View 1 (cartoon, helix red, strand yellow):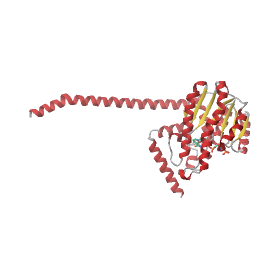
View 2 (view 1 turned 180 degrees about the vertical axis):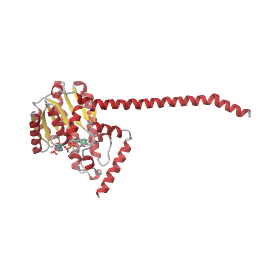
View 3 (view 1 turned 45 degrees about the vertical axis):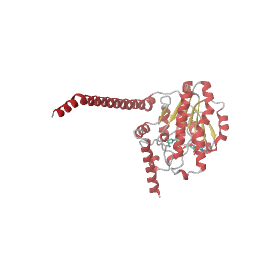
View 4 (view 1 turned 90 degrees about the vertical axis):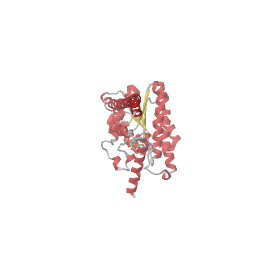
Length: 325
Ligand SMILES: NC(=O)c1ccc[n+]([C@@H]2O[C@H](COP(=O)([O-])OP(=O)(O)OC[C@H]3O[C@@H](n4cnc5c(N)ncnc54)[C@H](OP(=O)(O)O)[C@@H]3O)[C@@H](O)[C@H]2O)c1
């Protein structure tokens, strides 16, 4: 009986205070964690409001801030054409670099008629690699290039890697990867000399995920995002704005193979709306989805571990492919 009383007394006097301290420590950790989650949530919301809404309230003098001319690659359709028109709306002259001469001429005529700026067109098939850059350089030589939009990009429909052709591999490398540093190399010296300019690289939300069935596309976009961050660190303090745009769905030819992602809606922007919104973010974010609902979508996806997103994507593609059979 006496032993039992002693044990109970020992429990009350010695163990309980220790347990209480452990409980307090856990509560403190919990409060800190909840605080950091709240602060990071509020920070994200504030940043989102500043980048996607506040930025639109101010008129921008892109010509004065960056220079007279903008070069846009892949500018005869989709996001690139949207960017070319939006920059022309801000009074910039546009060099359109793209593959099809007829579409280039029509896009240039449209821009001149609508915005009264100068244009120049360069027919270049980026999938041919190195050989196209001498001609592009000739067109850019005597122009004050203020903004470069590295937009050109290609994507084959989702498929297993053994179904990807050798030609697809080199097209991805030349169009999605090599064009970005190669075009940057052409305009950077002039920008450094003038101590002003902007380089905008169009990556994608998929840059954050190693997606099966889109293995090459998502990897090439990771390259674009990573290269952009490095270039920003190197030249961000030399008066040059370096920006990475990582959109989700925009209704263009690129995703026309799937009506559900191609149809414009709350999450799928039209190229013109997207470009207007993305251009407004220049100078407000080094890295952004460019469109507010895409920002919401990315924040939601980032709540989950990458393996979960990858697994969902895999099952979604496999489900769709079975339905098509
Ligand atoms: N659409 C989306 O949902 C989405 C989402 C995230 C990121 N992105 C990125 O946004 C960028 C633009 O995509 P988009 O959706 O606007 O594509 P798009 O509608 O297919 O337009 C692509 C543009 O690039 C040109 N182009 C394609 N291959 C070329 C080549 N080998 N050489 C020269 N020009 C070429 C096309 O010219 P032609 O007219 O001659 O074909 C067209 O002007 C890409 O980098 C893409 O990865 C798109």
